[in-house]
Image (cartoon, rainbow, N blue to C red; front, side, top):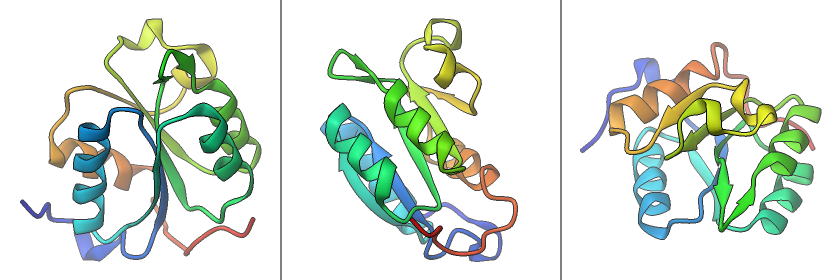
Length: 133
């Protein structure tokens, strides 16, 4: 189902998708691609996600707090250093999410398409195109 996005504001935004559950990653990717985003990934491991977070031209990211039992804190820290906005997703409640992740916009799993697109859109009040590396 296509989710309405005001004025196609998310068109061509490069979003890093860091999610270790294949079915969840596929659903997020499909939803955001339908909304006009270009997805980088999905990537399910901390090391690969960190490499992309440190150097890939990105507008933003969707980051699962827990990656195969490892925290996504290093990925979040790399995105924060570069000034790249990101949305944290998790099946855990926000108080249980590590601090560098807990002070960011948060979406609890499971979530609907509209909630995902809305939360992602809210990260980018004025979209200017992919950030330089």
